[in-house]
Image (tube, rainbow, N blue to C red; front, side, top):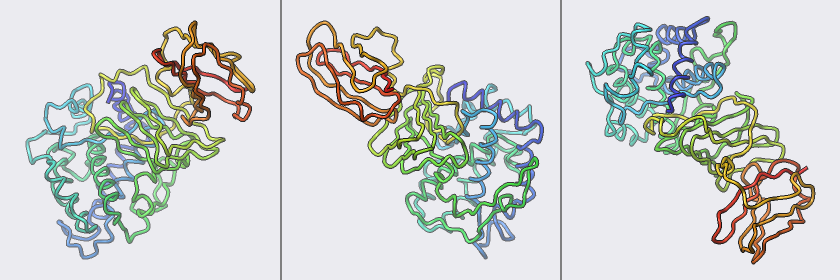
Length: 417
C-alpha cells in the first residue's frame, strides 16, 4: 500500500468509530451471535450434526463488504487490504507500525501481544487446506484449524475474543481467508449453502436507521458478485466480469501496481467504470467498453510506487469514483515536446498529420477510450498523412498513436466532434 492509502485507511477506521459506530456494532453482533455465525450447532469443535447450515465464509465476506461500503462513503478510493500472514509474519512488520495499524492497540485498548501465543499460518498450512476438494471438509479444516484461528491467537487481546472485529486487523485477517475461499472455489466450484439468508443479513436487522438487505449466501459464492477482485504479486487481473453499478454509481478499481483487464471484462451501455493505477494499466483482448458506457483509466501521478508495501497484502475492490478523467495511456502524461501534430483537432471526417521534417515510414493507430483499435494505417517515406475515412467514428475522445521507424513513438489526444 502507498503511504497515502495507509493514512486514509486509518482515518476511515477512526471515523467509523464516531457517531453510530459501525465498528462496535459489527463487533457486538459478531460476539452476540457467535454460534450462529461460526458453528450453527452446539459444541466446539463443530460436531457437523448439521454442517450445511454453516455460513462462516459467506457471512464474513458480507461483513467485510458492509464495512468497506461504509468506508467508501467516507473516501471513495478506499478498499480493505488482505493480510498474507504466510509472508508478512513478523512482530516488527510495517503492519504494526505506529503510523499504521499499530496505533490502534493503545488508542482502542485492544490488548494485543503479538506472537506471545500460538503461530501464524504457514504456506504449508495453507497448501494443505487448499488441497481439500470436499466442501464440508474444507470449511471445517479452515474454520477450526490454524488457518483461521492462528491470526486471532497470534495477535491476541481482543482478536482472540468474540468481539474480535473491534480490532481493525480482523478485517485484514478475514480478507485473507476470503481470498483463500475465492481461490478454492475457482478451483473446485463446490461451495453450497442450505440456508437462504444469514444472521444480520436476513432483511430484519437495522443499523443507523437502515434495514440491511437479505443476502442468500449462495449468491455471493463468487466474490465478483460483489465486484471484488484480489490482487497479488503486483498484478490485478480483472476478468470474466460485467459492470453492473449495483452497489456503486461508478465501479472504480484502484491498484498501485499493474491492472490488466480482458477476457470478458464488459462495461455495458449506460454503465460507468474507472481504473486507476500508480504504475500500469493494460487493456487486453476481451475487454469491452460498449457504446454508451462511460470508462476511464488513469495513472495516479500523486502517489509514488516506491512507497508501496509488499505485494500480496492488498485487495482490489470496486468503489465509487469521481467523474472520469482522460487519459489512460501513461505516455500522454509526458511533458516532452511533440514532433507529430494533428489538425484540425477537434475533427469531423478527416484529420491531417505532420510527421516531422523528414520523410519516415511507420504506422498510424487510433484507439477509442476503452483501448479498442478503431483505425490502422501503414505509411511509407512520408512527412504528411491525411486520414479521410473517420466519419463513422462516434463523437468523443480518442488516442492517436504514430509509430515512426527509428524515431520515438508518439501519442496524441484527438477529439471527434
